[in-house]
Length: 375
Ligand SMILES: [Cu+2]
Image 1: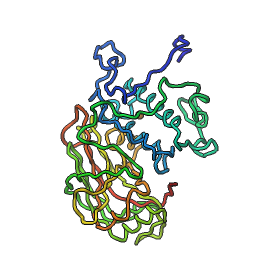
Image 2: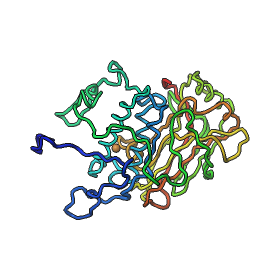
Image 3: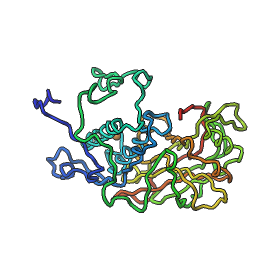
């Protein structure tokens, strides 16, 4: 870009929404001659932010491991920033909104900051298979994955500020929200949203390597928060418990040894109202409490769901499916007594959000998987 621009001092901007959650004014001036303007649902993303990826417990990096930065940062703030801004940003054409590039520069910067923060945070070793292969940008431009290991030495750029955010933007936490994911001690006491009138999906194998121990069918989401509740057999909870302890779990009806637990949202569809974004849902697994009461249960935040995530999941054709790993240690022994599980969808609105039906989920279920995840 320095060559093309003829400016040897050209630098790329990033948008630090933790410092200012409102879109820079250059992007919101609706003048027809402003190349940075596109219509958006929201221009403030405070509702999309969280400090969860920067927690001391998030020390792994790569997807597939527990307590990993990559899926945590993607879960929030990356995805909800797409969702809350909405319109083009909530689609796979999101690079057509110029703010995309400043958002992604900031995501890259947050990664640099996470690496620099130390405290046991570790990138995969250069010898790890994570670094095999290459990124293809155009038919004539590829880059070895291994060359993206480090920004300063490999890629020869740096950011003006390479520190992790430590505070949320002032006065921007809505409605007592707690934003934490995927680590010990990050449960919250959550009043579970009311259960929707969804039919149970039943226990069944869902593939060669996965087995559903329960779910709910035809789960419709709108501007309200809602829970999908379904029965789980005590013996299946026992298998979950084994897996949470780090042991393989087995279930009746399958000869497999299962090694991880996930919440799967299958056959996802967006309504016309939900298509443009401007909202998202926090996805929680509510583990059953000893007395079976609906409130005061231990809940764990698994990730986020919105138009951008669904558009991404359906990008390569076939039914849109999203899965959320339940990290080991999140489901504790004392939580595993009563046979009702809840997958809860906590609606998060932007300043502007659609009313009415947004998302349809063919089945929301709790699955065991043979996939091994390192602790
Ligand atoms: Cu993105």
